Length: 66
Length: 286
Image (tube, rainbow over all chains, first blue to last red; front, side):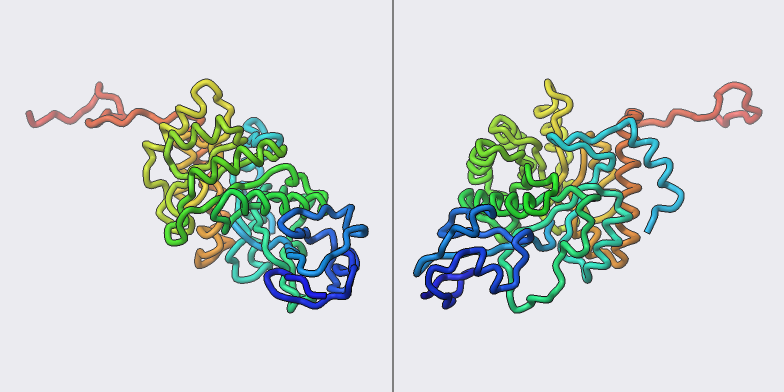
């Protein structure tokens, strides 16, 4: 299925959870925050939150800023 | 890199003059940004000598092409610095609120004390980077209701400043001049009025100059006006020698704070002699 990942279309397997996706992307879950369809997906629910076709996903981290 | 001679005097001076910012307390009154440094290593050195205990960070999309790349968190001692996540780059209240929630989520994961606050920045114009006061107010109300301590970047308008305080802002942070412009405090009279209105019956309410610092004297001048602290980034990061400038900013902040506490003499049109008028051996020609 396709999701919109950080503004770009990306193919992922059906019913993948956020935790599984972060693992596939080798992202440290402590250093990122995830939003699905404009709503924050809390870290403690990543294992049980599955993604759906067309979901709009944002994965953000910290960068330098003022 | 340790401070040389001023370290002892700084600690002594600041021990009696804590900087309360909402639920946080610092000894140093600078908040320093982490953007625009040539390298992370240079940033780390500059932050070290700036004396700051509170640094701002931005929230941005994870870039996967650089999976093994450097992350700012590899260069920041999370036990030393309280992180202050910002909402820089947001042009409406809705996006600023989303960004604040995401920043809080990351800081909770890092177990950093900065997870309870946000530097709210809602811009209205990409050329001047001036804030949108209406969206800033709306975001302040929303984020305060969600339990955030909101530090509001705003313009130097005293009426907006009062509205933000009434909406629950933990601190109001008027710009001295536009972000990254290096023009210093352009309208000190507005800052004076902001200070009077915000602190008149609430002297401990924090007012911080956020943006516009170009060199050390800008900070001293701001601190002499009576603001509680100064937030800056470009003035250090883009100096020819950022580490040296960071040290200058640290000294300038201490100088300005001490001068404010000491109380300056009033300005006079005419001179007043420093040496005694009596006992002069010279005769006057008139």
